[in-house]
Image (cartoon, rainbow, N blue to C red; front, side):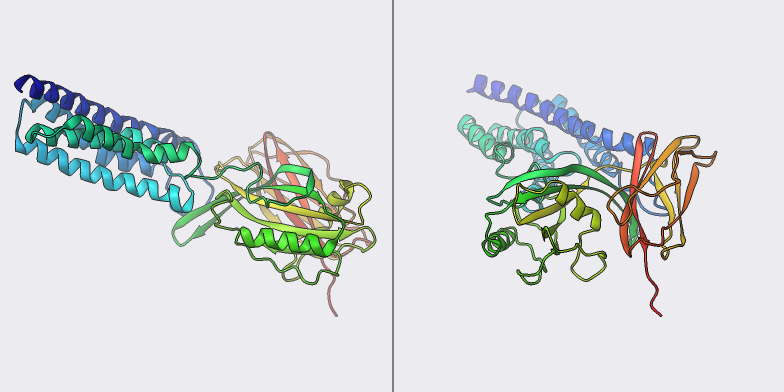
Amino acid sequence: MAAERARLHRYLRLALLLQAAGMLATIALTVPDFIDYQLRTLECGWCFDFRGVPFELSLTFLGPVIVVLLLIAWRWRGPGWWPFVIVTVIDVLVLVVAVVMIIPLVFSRTDLVPPGASVALLLLLPAIATFVLGACLEWPLPWRPILAASAVVALLPAAGQGLGVIGPVRQSTPGELSLPFSRTAAYEGRDLGCQDTVQGWVDMHKCMNATLLVYRGSGDLSNDMATINRALTVHEQGVAIGGVGVLPLDGAINRTDSRSVDASNAGACLIITDRLTAPPTSSTEPGRCALATDYADIRSHWPADDAYAIGIIYFWERRDYRDQYSVTFLNMTGTQPGGSVTVAVRARPNTLCSIVAVDSSGLSNVRGLDPKTTDAAGNVRWTWLVDQSTTAGRWPITVTCGATSGRTFWGVYVSRK
């Protein structure tokens, strides 16, 4: 009996050391976020930046606990209530923290810093081991089966995440609908640039990507529309698409919180067009999301000799940050046909920048946009005259300075007299 208790005590001290090591590893997983905070500056004016906070919190709360666990492992020489009570309090707090970190994986499919996958192995399992061994040291309980059963329960979240049962859903294109149509990618992962806004006191930083997939339908437009609507219903999305018999047709699809879609999805744009009907020249009407260039992309990837084509642009958020040298648009003016347009950006000083502006034809026909070099402050601008024949609408502009790029839109409007 004494030999068994001595063996159990050795296992308990080893478990305490492993628990301290797991907490230290948890702190280490927050260091990259802290380094990013130190080395990369966000351009958001006066706002809060929460990068680095997980490191500071974990170091503040887990640091003292690690010291306490090491002292207990050193001083706990045998049965005693005071070390068991301290270890129990620590284990209960760890259990609460683990639940708080696992919940976002299960319900919102988002991950935290440190990663939720580390919770079971680094925090939950060592906490259960120290509690079970400590309790069995105080009471004559069969610690082996209890510890084995507890370990299985603790590892269930990690197993569920490994099997894809819980956690973020990864798809080839976030938010993509499951449609029984063949498809062709007109473009994939197009960079739409980044934007910083301040919501309350919190900096909201969003970088967006887009992919346009052109689908080949069954040949029966009514049936295809019904199929698309069923897919939207499954994905718990809403879309305003008007009548089936009206072409071209486009409508904005809201982002979805469906568990079958990646959490980074930011919505989609549904476009159905035929070969004869002229595409709309404006995307400012309620519910309309497609641009003239989107229709040009679809026409360049038209599926065989079909009478109509289905195009869906999927948008999703990138989880990256913009530093002080990314391309930032300082102003973007619109004009009437025959007027002038000016675009000014700021990027890394003394860097060569190129600009591509697409006009109403869907091509980069704007003349006079030669590459320029930013000045010592990082500023550069272009100005050009708009042809009298240009129709009203909005078209994309892409500016690339060194290894960074940004994208916005320029517009042509017709004044109403």
